[in-house]
Length: 230
Ligand code: C5P
Image 1 (tube, helix red, strand yellow):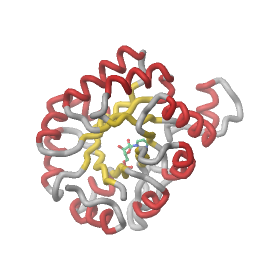
Image 2 (cartoon, protein in one colour):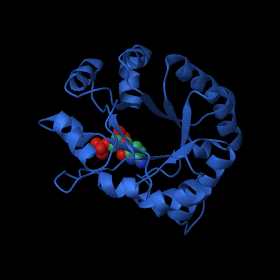
Image 3 (cartoon, rainbow, N blue to C red):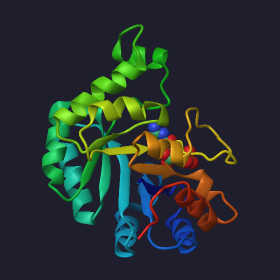
């Protein structure tokens, strides 16, 4: 069973809290760069104090010492999961893992879903790259560095599952039921399909944030096989 992670892609802490008041129990929440830049550590602290497991998605990619410092800061805030970018390299990921200790799950971003083969190829200076092979290669690197898992699109779950050890985190955005608007997501899957393929965390934004009844939208995901928040 997979946890639902509510992506708090909202413009302010006030709106984030207003949304959370409308949801039952304390689901996982994702804080990304926009809300973190606006509201910072006080918002993360208050989410943790309210009892939400927090996924801090800042995709760190910097020198090992700096990333390790950021991971320590996240750990001190009580964050449960955070992202680093696998392209930061093995030494960066190892430094991050050491800083995370056993309290903070660190997952690696492999190839951003905004890339196609041409744009990724021009970043890495190679032609004819297979994005699936790159995702597999970078997942290998994440495992070798001791990360607890990766973030991937629904289309890549089975590829990363073949590489990751049992119990690893497979964090998957792009979750849509048949009645949801797809929006700008290209590769989507339902909660039940992503869970059956091996996702452990389903990152869901607009289907909950824009629902007339966000609690009912969350209940729909639970009915499809996601875990009920505690
Ligand atoms: O609104 P929606 O359900 O599409 O939101 C998905 C969330 O997952 C957003 O916060 C988005 O930034 C994030 N995400 C993504 N694709 C990735 C990584 C993260 O959609 N590859």
